[in-house]
Image (spheres, rainbow, N blue to C red):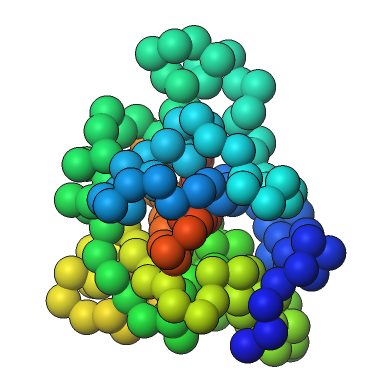
Length: 191
């Protein structure tokens, strides 16, 4: 896995999330408890340590700019809530999950273009994760991850279960933790 550059990172974000309601941001790792750093990223309290582009459709949202909803659309009150509802997954599953975030119900086989050209989408996901290499851990709010580090992301009658971090119909996410940075990638289905 080659380390991401500013340009490859921006291109990978665009490939995966250009037209998606997705929050993608990275902050510094400042605490022993990585959940505190993830919470700071969700609250937009910290800038990207490298100054790289992220994606934040709600940056200027009225509910977010009010002090009570600084983390909008996230509705968590503490870093402890972050750690309670996230479970570790392996890197291959995290790669697939980044692609699955393109679907409103987090089903990788329902992602437009996945059947025709999965390698382009998976390559973009690998580029995003390469920023955190060589040593990083991945966490998700998918409930199946409570029991396995490889939850299924294939199409089902209903999308996978999740612990909600918002008031929306569905929200799925990935937190990537290295020794120096914490990345938050979250998809929202407000319908």
